[in-house]
Amino acid sequence: MLEFLQKLLGLAKPYWVRLALGIGFGFLSGVVEPVLVLLIPLVGRVVFSGTGSAGTSNILNNLPPRLQAIVDTVTSWFSQSESGHSATIKILAISLVPLLFILRGLLNYLNIYYLQWAAIRTITDLRTRLFAHLQNLSVGFFVQSSTGDLMSRINSDTIALQNTITASLAVMIKDPVTVLSMTVLLFSLDAKLMLVTALVFPVCLIPIVIYSRKVRKSSAAIQDGLSELSTVMHESFTGNRIIKAYNLEEKVIQQFKDVSQRFISHYMRVIRSQEIPGPLIEFFGSVGVALMFAYFTFQPAPDPGRFVQFAAAVFLMYRPIKNIIRLHSQLEQARAASQRVFELLDNQNTVREPAIPHPLKAAGADIHFDHVDFAYGDKSVLQGIDLRIQPGQLVALVGASGSGKTTIANLLLRFYDPTRGTIRIGSVDIREVSTRDLRNQMAVVTQETILFNDTICRNIELGRPGATNDEIITAARHAYAYDFIMQKPHGFDTIIGERGVTLSGGQRQRLAIARAVLRNAPILVLDEATSALDTESERAVQAALDELMRGRTTLCIAHRLSTILHADVIVVLNQGRIVEAGKHAELVRRGGTYQKLYDLQFQA
Figure 1 (cartoon, rainbow, N blue to C red):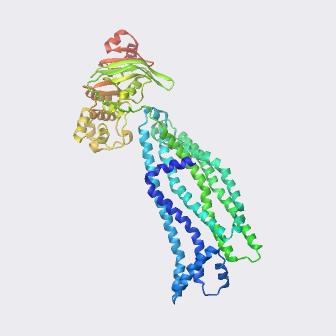
Figure 2: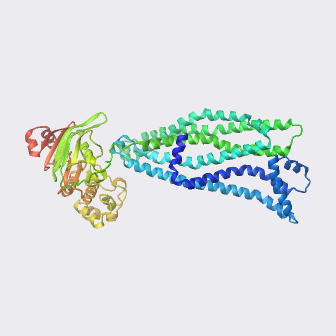
Figure 3: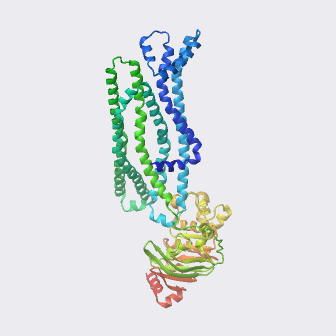
């Protein structure tokens, strides 16, 4: 727990001034409670001075010697200041009570305000740091991770940490000060009576010990439940077409209900662990009060004034004690959340940036895969890939699914590093180049077109942020997208919806090509860019691709062989190895693997 608090305070270090102010105001607010208990006899001394009330006299004259001296000093000052203004002085003394409550309210407000100020900025910084860290992790990390789980860690888990900085930290500072101050006051009022009352305190610790383990396990399960809920929602929203097409609504709803039910079970267990100790504390506290009654009952000359004052101080301790007991449960929940957050931050990028990056000039440079091997864990994907792509060439990769075509493209983009061998552009190993510099010199068009819920203009501009409107329009013309764009209600300013849902497949693909045209990179990677299109759309997209490939070194992953018949080199892959390479006519004459693939497609 101490390590967790150190990490939490370390996150808030940039805002330590406001955090310290919040803690300081909380400390002062905790001290005000016992001052209120002392203020009553002080006001009573001033108000009832000269009335001859025996009961009041007994109440006011039975304070401990040190406190009595303070009260006597203040009341004597009031007496000397009266000089014919007795009513005014008494009103001023009485007004001390609401003024002290105003002071306590102000201190509470400042305590909460500054802690919230520091908390929201600390958590926002943490979210930003976590989001940036995730963006810089390798593609392999996202392949193994759930999107819903990552979203839950950034949102739900950080909110739990924010509540710790605000609510829990306030309790940690203010309430222990209140309890300690009240304890000192009670000892000063009557040490023997305080010891009698405190006999039951060790018993109050039993509920905390019993429920602490349950809280720790359930808190971790709650965060996992929130993550699972986020995953179910994300998958159902992004896959809603399949859910509706196969009438899976009831199945998905039931899955959501089951996850929610497990979440409720763990959540209520935490609530029980938070709330059951409170009534137990009150019960044991009432036993302490009963012991106090018994103590006063058997005193030879019981003093009702001191009893009232002592009882008031004891009851004022109940609320902070209950808050401190709940604090343990809150900290356990926050620790479970923080563990998931810090686990993400501990993930290291498997694609390391070079300490001293080399400059890269890809224009006019060849690309050489030099005896490259690659494996996903224990599964070998590529073996001994030796491939050279000359500047300006169109090299097509063909083969059955799982033969390693997309993996070669991923290695060139340095989404992964090869397990053996090197990939060079010109004479430079791409591992010695910063990934930003490497990818700036490549444009990618994939089968799955990623568009964002923004305007057509902004989606094309992603190819080169900061491009002018004229450059964006020119790129759209080269991608054969200009005509359909101008038919939209707002032209280039048309919002296309999430993932470009308002566009057809061919239109989405031509926007992706326009983005690649705008990038104007010397190396182009095409990953089955037309395989999901109908014949008419494919012709339009293929014309745009032909325009895009002109003058660029192109690596094309092809599913439809008709799109790569004119390639300079066709590389045939089988089970992670290059089994053939050459032009279309040459490979057909050989009668090997390519010829079989060709016959299968064109016979069909």
